[in-house]
Image 1 (spheres, one colour):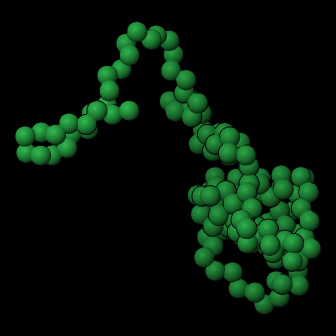
Image 2: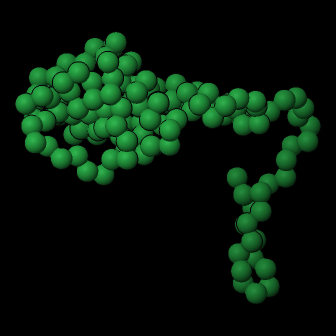
Length: 135
């Protein structure tokens, strides 16, 4: 909550409410800011908190249309590939998983689209800055 005032010139001044100095103890730092740890560890914690890799509506539709079924183990491998791309600073990545091609938004931790072997013939991928091949 903020207190709003106006100065004599009519400019709005917004100031935070005073802190309650009666409370003591440690502040809960759930984001891990200030704690020792590598960027990769912080990234992994962030991904874990958000629930892992997401599928866009477009990717879900493509998976259904092309009868591509990804199990937990498959998704874990793909998520690991996305994390590796993130650790290298990628923004949009092509993930090759067997005969399946997936385009992932690293920033949003989301699979954008999916293609199977038949759809890959003579296909050009644009707007990607990395590729990860998963065995």
